[in-house]
Length: 472
Ligand SMILES: O=C(O)C1=C[C@@H](OP(=O)(O)O)[C@@H](O)[C@H](O)C1
Ligand SMILES: C=C(OP(=O)(O)O)C(=O)O
Image (cartoon, rainbow, N blue to C red; front, side, top):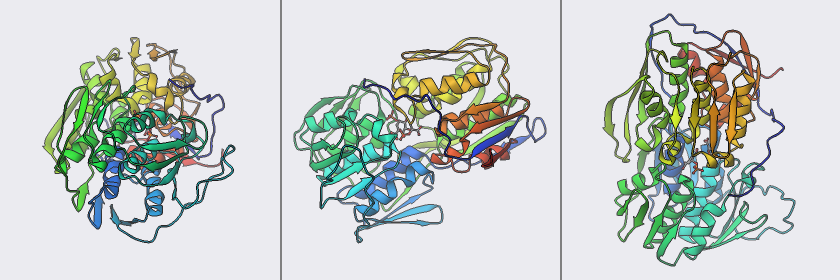
């Protein structure tokens, strides 16, 4: 594992979120809310427009409109695709005149490669990593870069296996990190072993192999979210394999003219957690949620611990993803602790760890969230920032190399808590604050826009008192 970043000084570029505890709606009420489209499925659907043979127009309906997905659009435009919002859809047209992006200065780079598109994906690691995979499959010459935070996140997780398969990828700055230059396609069939469970790393290699039409077997240590494989299979691509490998075989695929994006389970988790933490009875329904089992860890862990969460109206979409309604009834009475102790379960709730930690802090027993070493390489070192945020409410959290031990039974209180400019940390903090008496300010909490632009509206619809305050 590479060296982790230091997040000693919380940054507060975004407005604060101010939350007053308690629920505005009557006890036992029924609520139904809609959450945004799945971020991961949105990234993959948009990138399908860059696969060889993609249709002249691809309509992605219900895409997530947060900063992480938007970060991909200027890069696509720089590659000569037209991307336009039409209602709740993003319409991708090709080819159009490329719209170059501005180069972000880098302390170690004086001369940038000329005559190749410069592609900047802001802070979105999924956008950068999946894009590198597609470029390595199509043999497109380009530079892929990101913001200061993304420039610290590991890219060797995918660049190493892509290079083994023959791709020409060079680091322009620090080895293992962005920016990278892609200059030649994967062209050596074979088997590669991934050393991390990252779905982005696996997806990059699978997308490269499929785009290049190269027979490749990708062995991986854990079956993390499998949206790429499901999407490609829905396009007709023959992918076989087992729990630990994906075999990208011969045979073509057809990218359809429209793809529907189901709602994001990692975003549905916030109103569900708020509802359970209020523990005042009632029922909350969230329709059209992606029920892919590789994404349901947060709900499954709470169900196993005794919470009443069910999945209803299940069906499978044309895109290969199961969807349905997530229904939460009652609260957390009888739930004493939670436990995550397998890599597959951890990956099924990887983005919900900060939220699970704050829920665990309200329980009487000690909870363990393990197998989580990859959390150190997110927007922040999320083992450290989750602990610091949860402790700011009065909780006791022990940080291990690979996880968090959240001690039960601490007295929790409202106050000023750090959001670390990390959307998952900020939304978890605001959600716990909804259940605590008094006023909490989540510093920089408006960074929720990275993945959940209408977070405050949705939480208000289930009874929260939450607003933005840029005047602190
Ligand atoms: O494949 C994806 O779209 C994602 C995979 C996960 O990251 P890793 O691949 O780094 O585990 C997750 O944390 C991220 O929000 C989105
Ligand atoms: C970690 C996340 O995304 P990414 O890795 O794409 O930045 C996230 O959405 O929590």
